[in-house]
Image (cartoon, rainbow, N blue to C red; front, side):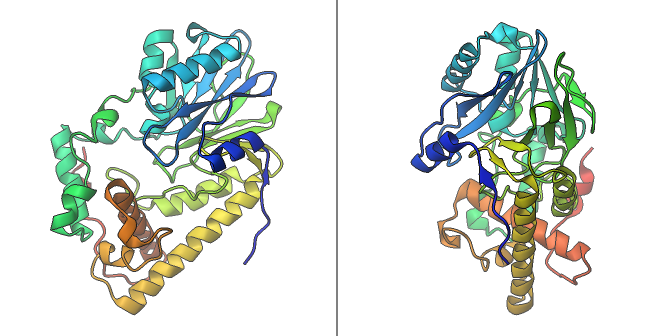
Length: 350
């Protein structure tokens, strides 16, 4: 079924995305700026950080991956808006991923700004006594999902890959659903939108007609909805509910953390729902046709944009964990599925 298309508004951003270059700093209106921050060695290439100016105060949304070059780009973007780092009052991060929260600790140290996350967002390591315990539980889950022993080291997180997670900033503030971001002169409301992460938030600035969607809704890519440890038991079900919550309006401009700005939140939410419904149907077809024993066996029979054999390391881990989220969702819808997904290690999180 063909659904109505969104209207692209970030034309320079889209052109930069297509040309695989960094987009320009842009002033969206008198008080809002878009500042791209490089995401090195990643297909996403950059995070779109947004600077909002209030009454003598300023807030930065999603400062991006922590790097020297990223800091240079942020500093230059703030300078273009007439600010220095010391002028920042707060840093609001839509979710606890390194390409969003990574720069927050460095910025807080330099500027003195507070850092805020949603009230339900999870620090993955904080749920465990130590990182080694987390890594063991993570490997146990991947083994339960059927990742072959000779691929486990490739797919699983290791101590090196935890470096950025360990160094991510703990928040000074937790923002509750429907609350206002505490910046003078702004009316930016928090909407809790779990799915891509357990406590993801979007920010709605009705006076400026803007929705800052983080990774919850992107114009072209379907955000990963993965079964994570620790995390909610049915993230895909959460995501569907969150799409309904944020698709309350279709004419406000959507400012995502990647790709480019657009108008048509309701239209894009409908496309994402259709995508995941079709994916669940494909998973169900594999279960009925191939009778797989593990999540890995389900995943390798699914269609992937560049083919299953092309998936490696982090991309392979995402593919398997996303497949697990569909299996869990289908089971919650009453389908009898014998593929094991969750083990006792999930109950051992303190």
